[in-house]
Length: 228
Image 1 (spheres, rainbow, N blue to C red):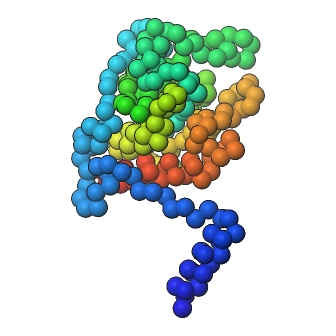
Image 2 (image 1 turned 90 degrees about the vertical axis):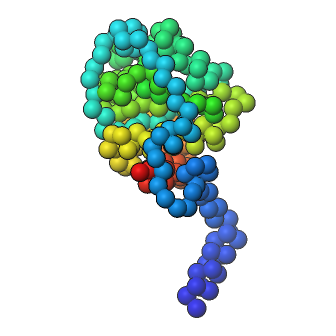
Image 3 (image 1 turned 180 degrees about the vertical axis):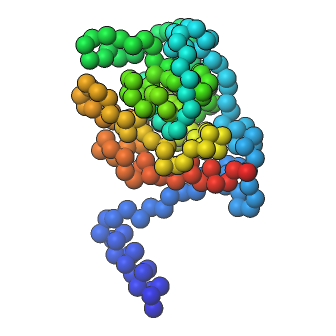
């Protein structure tokens, strides 16, 4: 009887327009129903390429040690470049950091990984602070930065899935909880208007974390729980 009532309620919710679309389970190697997944097997799916900005240059001119506590997810909002082109831009010092209050720049932008629908590229060690979130704030001091590409014609859903797999691996390696996987929006930017950036914009709802962000976290946590 209780089951029948539940089915009736769900039917009514769908009828009045409440979203009843289930969260689709991840595809690929992590969709296996039995057994754990070796980290190396999931890393193979991520297709990680190491292409570091040389130490002493541009965003790594000053090396600042970091013990990561968070993982911060961004979107590039650059519709004409994939991960390889972003990697080249970082190595050339083509991406300058925004001006701070008072008009001074703090150097070059740099983050740890860029993902697209073909691969993930690492630009700097996860033991170093990047410049991707909130100037001198905790987002830069304590978080690994991942930029998701949104090049025109690319498969954004594949990029998001690859990012979720990379997040799971980083959670495992650094002992980071899913509760500390955050969007760029999480970190306030002193002196900026708006203070909280709409980033990654395609994983936020009306500029704020909501259903889409929670779905991304569920996917990343799913992969994480499958790891050996």
